[in-house]
Image 1 (cartoon, one colour):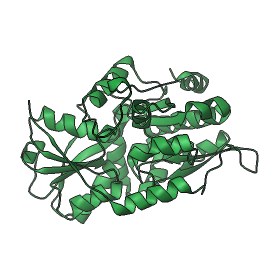
Image 2 (image 1 turned 30 degrees about the horizontal axis):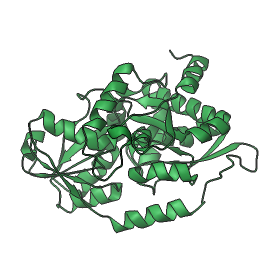
Image 3 (image 1 turned 120 degrees about the vertical axis):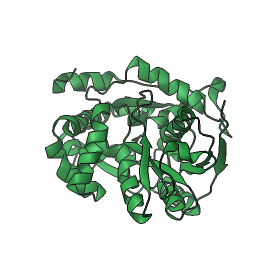
Amino acid sequence: MKRYTWGAVAVGAAVALVTSACSSSHGSNPSGKSGGGSSSMEIAIPANSAAASFIQLAVAAGLTKKHGVDVTLNTSITPPNTPAALVSGSIQGSALTSTATQANGKGLPVINVVNTGTHAPFVMLGGPDIKSVNDLDGKKVVTSAPTDTPGTETVRILKNAGVDAQIVSVASVPGRSALFVSGQADAVYEALNLALKDQAKRPGSTIIGDNTNLAVTPADGIAVTKTYLASHRTAVNGLVTACIEAANMMKNQPAQATPYLEKIYDLNASEVAQFLDRQKASLVTNGVPTEEAYANQAELFNAQPKQSVDWTAGKVQASWDTSLAVAAAKTLGFS
């Protein structure tokens, strides 16, 4: 059995941003209603990461507004802090299914309501002297928190290659990029759009692997608190419907999605085509994860180092309510 050493990196700027986001009501409305009568929601996403492409596209293409939801996207809250932000009411949703997994491990009433992908478009980007995942033996790999989906996938990719590397856990997306670009990490595991940018910033770096061969998990979706779902079901339903429509646009109408994605991620048409090609097979248009994906997610999270988290009953379980997704998919004509 290979051993993996987890390092911890504190990113002061990220902490300041999280503190500011959790203490401010900017963009959020606890009542869920805007002055115009439509629902208003603030949703946390992992920086400008393509892992949240379904919600970013839904907002940019006007799908959320079409379904009566005025969405503000918040990129300043790191994944480990999203459960607390949801429960406090400073945000109303999170574009990471791992948020519910983390929250349930802490006994917090957060629930996933839609699944739009089995694999977020993540890749392993190696430095100039790294040509394959096997070259990472004894090297330093920076990734997200161990209780976040990219963190679990990083461990699995290295384990599958039989590689013994030091894994550096950094919750902040800019923090991970900074470590890799500056040469303090030999590789970084991040969303494809971010990897393309970091590849340009660190000449000679190359994409050496991805998650396409990993077991499927419900990687992309929306999490809300059970209380918010109960009191704002119509708003959540509109959001879920828009997310499914966005996933369908990327999967089956790439030409329609491309101009939006170019603008969202500052990519050219060729880069967007690469992104959509990698993501196409993993997109889910019925909004519901498979039983296999449930089981794989539980296995991945339970295998992670627990660190200082107070895990409920010693294990992690993700809570789901896919009734809205089932109804929305049926209305949209997806099975």
